[in-house]
Length: 76
Length: 76
Image 1 (spheres, chains in turn brown, blue):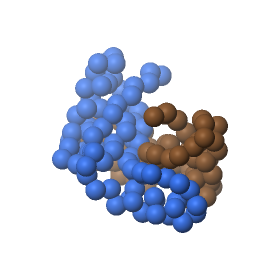
Image 2 (image 1 turned 45 degrees about the vertical axis):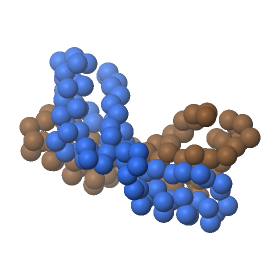
Image 3 (image 1 turned 180 degrees about the vertical axis):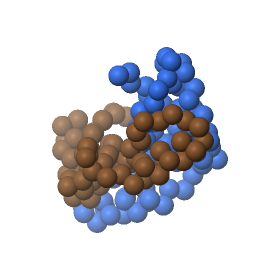
């Protein structure tokens, strides 16, 4: 899943990266830094997997006040 | 872009998340944590954008010894 700072929420890490990229000569207008979390889990089907991952995000992986998350499922 | 710990490289953050998910009752077999970095930049075309982002990764955003990166371009 991808966990990103919500629109309008300050992102100090993104600002630091943007400053460093400027110093290196890159013309970047905006940088936002979030997390990619790859989880391998046991699930009955895709719906079960999605429901589990949504609960993981809500309970541990994302702070809903300041972060949004996006889920992508791969089967193996 | 997505920056992830390479296969075989220790990922303490992923292990910590896995331990916490276990304690919450989730059956997760593997967790890896990386970064998602969204950059808005000025480029002549897609090839130019990709070349710039590859240089950003090599020069600042990813440590090639322990991390791999994946680039996705969106036009606006």
